Length: 70
Image (cartoon, rainbow, N blue to C red; front, side):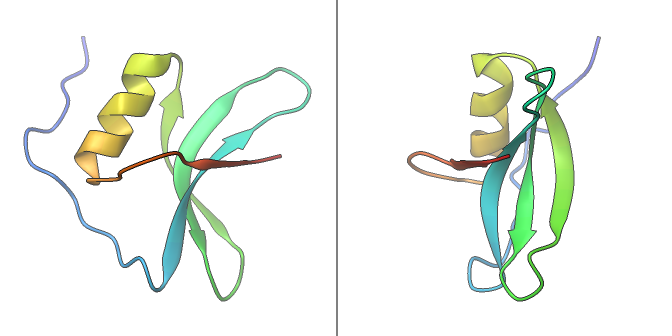
C-alpha cells in the first residue's frame, strides 16, 4: 500500500538527533528528529513494528540504537 523511498534522506547530526517519541498512554511510537538547540520534535513517520523502524534507520542512514523520549 505504501512505498518506501529508494534513496536515503539526509539530516544534520550537529543540529538534530534521531529519536523515537513514545506515548505513555497508548504506546504509539513516532520516529523523528529532536532539534538540539530548542528541543523541538519534528515527526517523520509512525513506527508500527520493527520493519518501520528499520526503514526509518535505512532512509536516514542511522546506525545503532535510537533513544526513546516520552
